[in-house]
Length: 137
Image (cartoon, rainbow, N blue to C red; front, side, top):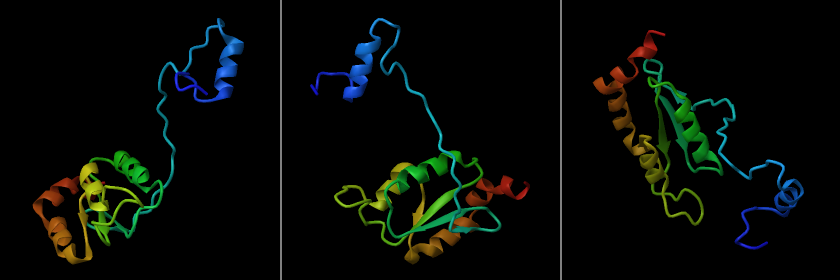
């Protein structure tokens, strides 16, 4: 198939040939869609509702999954990561590391060596205000 063709398959091209002049437009707009799934966080802090996901590596599709989870959370709920190695590449051959991906996507991340920083964050005034509405639900 020619690179100049607007169609991505022979079937699309053949269908267009059959219906040419019948009022069909090819890919005229985007239609957003949502795939509903359930997510069970690894750990949830009982007083703040802060969710912690422990990751040694990201499987195929995980980065999209966690962005979708983030986007579906209410503004009083937060997901953070505990990474085994933030310098580990996202996947084989990738340039970006797991830690860089977290920063790019606005996720806080910690390691076993920085759990104390996570605890300080949970006990801070900032996280208390961030999650305060959760307590009253």
